[in-house]
Image (tube, rainbow, N blue to C red; front, side, top):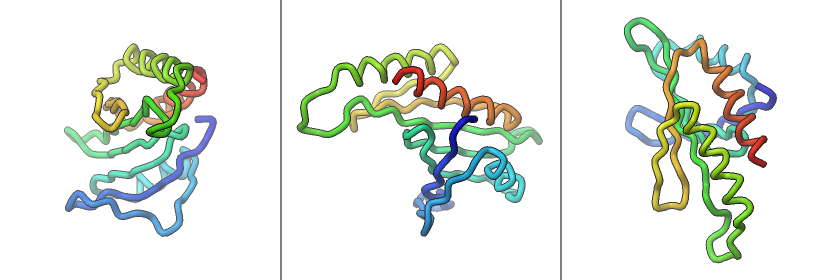
Length: 138
């Protein structure tokens, strides 16, 4: 992965977000170390390539797996002039994610949630892919 993740907070068992007092910026190696220290499930809210992302780590059949929920906004500020060029770039990124096997789900808040699961061994590659897809789309 080229960049880093900014950890915003961790989801608690009751479904609330416990925000970090100071947002930590980590690279993949540091993220992997944090994951290894956890015995149970882990759900983090992070910023990845400027996009709000929920990263979940869980165990299934003895194998550690990840789940990603990437939020791709379709507009910037409500009430401002609509940026069609930005929308075209975001649509390109969404198409790339869809072609990769992401499940896309639209939301009233003006964003698309993009879901994908896989083996924890593939997480670094997947984070790198998302970062490249967003960067290449502009």
